[in-house]
Amino acid sequence: MIDLQTYAGFDGVGLAEAISKGELKAEEVLDAALAGAEAVNGTLNCILAMLPDAARETVRAGVPRGPFGGVPFLVKECVLMMKGAPYRLGSRLLEGFVAPYDTELMARFRRAGLIAFGTTSTPEFAYSATTEPVMFGPTRNPWDVHRTSGGSSGGAAAAVAAGVVPVAHANDGGGSIRIPAACCGLVGLKPSRGRVPQGPDYGEALEGLAAEFVVTRTVRDAAAMLDAVQGADVGAWFAIAPPPQPYSEVIRRPGRRLRIAFMDTSFSGTAVDAEVQDGVRATARTCADLGHHVEQAPLKIDWESFYGATVVVWSVFAAAVVAWMESVTGRTASPELLETATWATYQAGRRISAVELVAAKGVLNAASRQVGRFFENYDVLLTPTVARLPVALGALDQNAAGITADAWARETFEWANFTPLFNATGQPAISLPLCRTSENLPIGMQFVGRMNDEATLLALAAELEQALPWSRFKPVVHVSRDVPPVA
Image 1 (cartoon, rainbow, N blue to C red):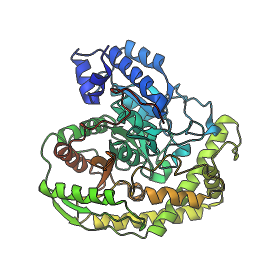
Image 2: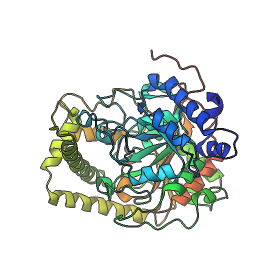
Image 3: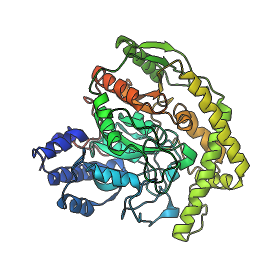
Image 4: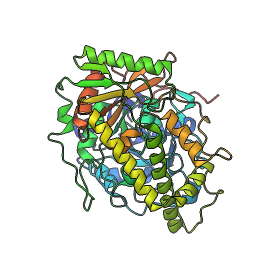
């Protein structure tokens, strides 16, 4: 069997190449992933359901000849469904529900050759910047087990950072790919709206705010995965323009010199940690040293209007999700089955009229037009991914007694202040682990591109990966190390 240190040294593309060449067997690679999960999950609590028998059956049937042929994989229990796997959205209301079919993206993951063997944790309804559902308990950060791994794809990010898998499914309705990528030291790309399919269950999940994809450790895995899954599915509401060339080719040659704006102050005026601000300025200098034109040019928006409209959309979506859960389980939503903030958000959503929802979407449209004008002058915007370092577990409590829908939203969006705007605009955005704190925690930097221009972001990311390689850093909890107990 391949040892865990060797296994975790591969990214997804590298593992697939080794399997294709006969240097590794898919069976032994899967065994390594299962052993890695066993080694770290007791500490991190990132994987909810293990499905080794189904995974082994897939391998025995013959590994699909895709770009990730034989690569172990994990699926977040949110939006995407994997037939036969638990699907609970972090909620007691959906306890016991099993996905009845593969959604389109899952089918594409399978065709790419990925071998799914488990599911990862998410906060209830994916409505949090930390992953601490009452139903399953907190997911811990591999770099510091007393801190959050981020949310809502915190389970996926913790598993990838700890070396269990090189790539895992994730999604992003307000930062849920980018925030955990920043907390856990990963590459977190949120693709453009419509780039990755959400069918057949959704046309535009969360009124178009949500995007599906993965978290990875390397840029080339992100590029290869986007090549494998991008494009509209049958019956989609609209078809996005295909990329002029494969993303995997784009990252292999020097990109053009860019006009990059940067900002180190938040959209809302919330404080930004000094080490985070220092990281933005250091990253800006690195970009300038690479020949890009870089200037400080903060993007200004009416935060209160934007915030209010975003909360309307999230609240209405929560109400719709509860209605669906009730229909498939026969249960009735109650404070006993939903966390305090979720229950409050659900009730707020039921009170919102269709007219108010349309008005909120109008506010988001206006913000998108304003941001679009900003990007007429710049190719890329650089910001921190999150305003502060990963918070302590328990600092963001979705089940706090008496918390209101507005209070919960403000707590969440104040910490995750830089990401949600670009869910509204639909632009691609990527978090890269370019900086570190004095305590060796990763600090994510967010780069935002023009709509439909993932290529520019990936080319820049590949260049920065060469200039500031992050692969040499390993977290405290990792499959290649002896895992310390939680004190």
